[in-house]
Length: 218
Image (cartoon, rainbow, N blue to C red):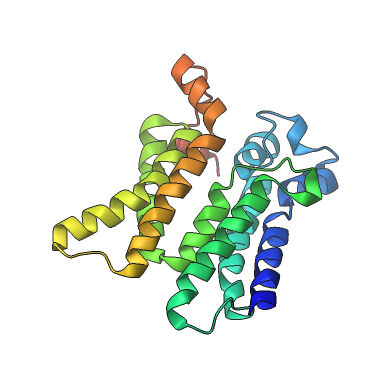
């Protein structure tokens, strides 16, 4: 089980390290996305630099990294205990997020991990993920900043779990407690990776995107 778990974590990191934005930008556009715009190897920079198609494909692939990483424990489990499956999925998902942010295949300079986090949470908690997506869209429509929408969306997950329990007046199960702590860790992680964006938001220089106008263009 130790060897199996190690394989699972290693594969999760390697999966997260696949720098799709870098490969797509180099192969189809003859340039490294990290030399444009924010310098970030993520889908937002791809959307802004190379257009909708490049950004959308990158986003889907980055989400799938999180989805597949969370499934690895089903094939390479850490333990036979069924109750431990959630912990294994979370561990692999988070390792994939680290791989996306610090990819070994791209000199450890990657993206911010929001799409990979979304993929992981879609596999683990679809309802909470749907709430996060709703918060993202609402924040984008009002604030028109991808960075702010991303931070609000990820931070909404632990708040959703807390509010749900307050409304039904029930205590947390072991699995829900784990998800709550993980949600808080992910929120801190995303805020940390967006620290430069936070500085620009405070100074009023963060780039804005009119989502409705972009959709009309398509």
